[in-house]
Length: 316
Image 1 (cartoon, rainbow, N blue to C red):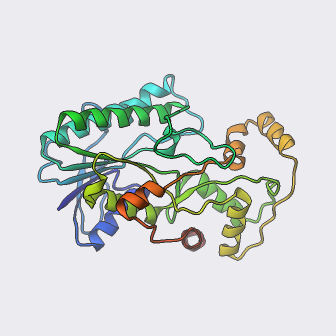
Image 2: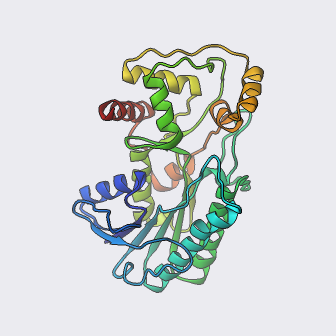
Image 3: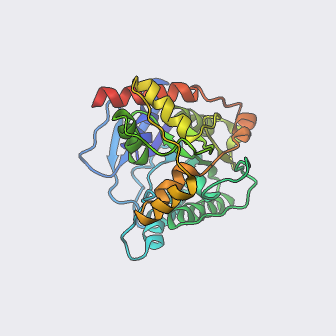
């Protein structure tokens, strides 16, 4: 069984390729640049991914595609038309690959979407589920939702099996972006005015996502399904910061502060969106993938945070 992994040199892609190889699977890694190299893996540079990318040679002999490559969400996008730019890669690049995969006789196509397709936050302990009406609120989320719809159309027109996963924030060794900034802040024991926050967020350890991806790729029952996937243990922002601090053996300094004043300060400083992500709730009901595919996350939230904290300390 030959797996094609797009975005193979990225945060999730490296972990997925390593685990597939550990399990004795054949892996072909699609990467952007000829400078990328991966041990014991066939690496194929494909350049930019869009509606014109040719995948003919790359797809030869492939049984399963796991499509990780994407134009990722950014906090402050400077392009004139963000939706157009996101759709070039996330919609047209995805649908182009899927149609060529179907033509090449690929059996199954695994697409990593985003929980942002469901919305930005949950209220009153309600958790997002697969039955919710999608409510994407920014260009990135819209492009992911449109790609999901395009994939379902292709599945109806061809024999290609589609499986979609919508993860929340993914963390683990090698993480970048906001979680990496959080690790740096915790490591320096910087006082944070977040002790009064009482939210709940679902997270996903990268090794748990890899496990879910392989299960979705190989379990016959997954064909045609969409799954929300998480560690299954929700956590508040203050609890998360304390857990990371404990794992790093450094003190955590969380200061009580009125949330209304904190939000006001965020607007004045131009950090309103970042603060809302720290203060708001986003919870996922991942029962469907557990029930349908008998999937259980191999690692607990505590194990994932411990491994992430240790990785950060070892690299600094």
